[in-house]
Image (tube, rainbow, N blue to C red; front, side):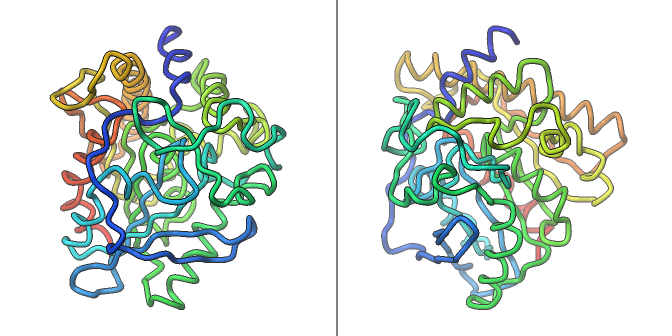
Amino acid sequence: MAILLPLGASVAGPVGVANAAFDRNFGYDFWVDSDMGPIKSRIFRAADGNTDRVVYALDGMRARNDLSGWELETNVAHALTGANINVVMPVGGESSFYADWNAPSTWGPGELGSSTGSSGGSSGLGSSDAAGDVDGKANTYRWETFLTQQLPRALAAREGFRSTRNGVFGLSMGGSAALTLAAYHPQQFSFAGSYSGFLNNSAPGMREALRLAMVSAGGFNIDAMAPPWGPQWLRMDPFVFAPMLKANDTRLWIASGSGVPGPGDVSDALGVVQSVPLEALALANTRAFEVRMASIGAGNVHYDYPQTGVHNWKNWEDQVIRMIPDLSGNIG
């Protein structure tokens, strides 16, 4: 673990070759005012036109401010809408963990490692400042408030979307955030999925690993998010709030790759160096969460551990496809 933490944190985001071309004719922008300023989401309507079945897709630590990595790098929106599920992709939130922060990050925009580009890619590409005023530096991140109050109200009023028994899933940073949203907002979220998530954030070394990751992904200061080891930090740790997920009877899909590259997972040696140790760290966190849930007798979880899979979009796209039947049966 001592080896994996700093090596994994140095990457701080998904790696791998993009699986999909961006389709400008599929999905549309949906702007909503928030405490952070105007926030864009991308909406993809269910094939059958229903408004009851809704899932939120959360991005990773290097989330861009123009489009979600899920749209740029995968075909999951097509798969989900084909299964008659409406998809909401919030855009932005680099290094935010989709949380309500204490204050703006104390480092300026663009410092300490931010760069433009995709939220995936073997080059460790970083953020886009297409909406730089909503970046957690000029403003305080208030993502939990946005995702559980302002966005669902706007979706209900303007699109007719149901705001209860929704689903939420995410990769890496978004995976732990999905579980946090479901734990504290059980009426809104009846299903949550985490792929390669960091689900044991209070384990020795994890806060400092995440500190380095957030410096790399946009130059964000973790201390502006939550004080070390205080109630706000523990509130964000799935290992700590696991009993709430059991009590809520939230249906969970928890997955992590093995860290062993499979066919097409990586295209070069750098991709192996970046994606393998980061996925191994996520796997260790996910296994710890599984033990925690077993210790309290939780039976509301499906665990998925493919024999191959590293920290990249191919792995996460495959997980969404496998998850769709379970998601479909537990929302709406």
